[in-house]
Amino acid sequence: MEQKSIHMEQKTHTTQDGTTVIVLTPTGRLDITTAWQFRLKLQECISKLSHHVVVNLGQVNFIDSSGLTSLVAGMRDADKVRGSFRICNVHPEAKLVFEVTMMDSVFEIFETEQEALEGVPRGIAS
Image 1 (tube, helix red, strand yellow):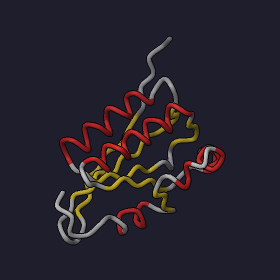
Image 2: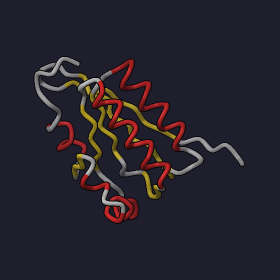
Image 3: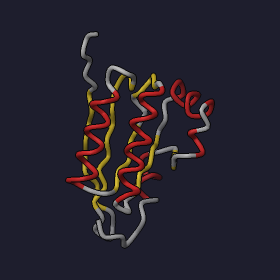
Image 4: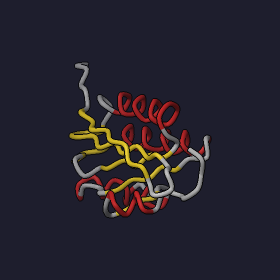
């Protein structure tokens, strides 16, 4: 099977109280060929950069079960270190997958990146 890579934009946001939040914006498909890379990136961000992560899915037009699994794993990693894990801007085509699998009730999902960033817990040492 051909190894595919996923393009990801990463930026750092600092909240008013000084909490660092990593915003990851993957592009393309989050499927069995790319989910492992995404998972590793999430792990690296949560363990080395900040316990608070926002994943902007506005550029992901396809997500399958392995993509969802990588998101669940990221959420668990953040929970273990008392961080936060939020998803925002879910592409309409990917939103259906969240609804059908009822994952929309598992994740904290926000309409916009700004809303997700505003919702990051205040005063939690990261």
